[in-house]
Length: 372
Image 1 (cartoon, rainbow, N blue to C red):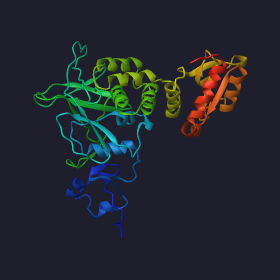
Image 2: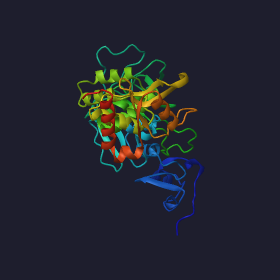
Image 3: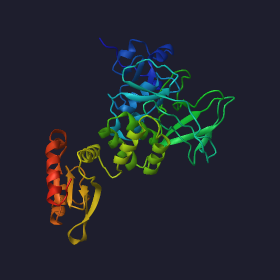
Image 4: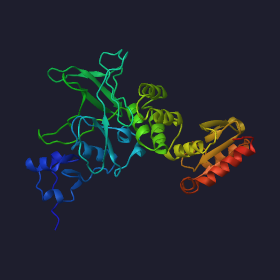
């Protein structure tokens, strides 16, 4: 018979090490098997009421990681607000110093970083800029920026900036006198048991670094969708992406990252729309404009999801993004009335009949004068 649920207040809504909770006398090993708790990985438990999303997976992974480890790539993008970047069942991507040997863990994707270094000519702010290069693709994590505040360093160390990556998260770095930058995890507010290790928000790469890591580590269709969302939400910018690409141009993965960044567009409103755009381009079609404004009857302006304006050909994604006061079918009708050829594409066709979508797009463009 399962034990009755028992949830001490200090563990409510928390992720914690089971061994710590047992040692503190908060729960017994038998009580941890009750429906009050969700076992996430070895010796890591969570309040079963927490949402089962990638943030929970990151919090669980953080409890078994060394303090030098940083949540990175698509996992960091999720923590910054890109919900489609990863799911509860996806691996958590982390960066660790190259000299550190981290044993394999289920649900963890480990990437190595090189030593922190000060690039020639860097600076301009009150605190040093820290960079790292990732094995399989260099990365820059987190650089100081205007408005950063300092945190006291350990004895013998020096102050560095606290970088707000966005969405209210903060990444603290400290630099001991004899070592590289170390990620410092925040202590959850209101914790009443001093040595009970609970996970707050894990330390993560800043959004621009997360974009770089994602571009290097993931396959392009998925990577572009994540970078699109980081741009659309204002978490990074084309200028910031160009800067990180230039600084890491000679790193492994540098050309790949620049290529992914070149395909990205902040106008895309869904990962499916990003995927469709990239697949059309990779198939050899001209690059379409995203959210192209078209003036139709009575001076009304509607936006084509993807458009080749020189040929007056547009692609309309399925209807989830209807314009305010103008439904999906009405929008298509207005574009057709203005002389456009419009190709409706549903999610099902994108998944199961992309060759048919491509044939139709080629034919429509060819009918309007495009030649490969």
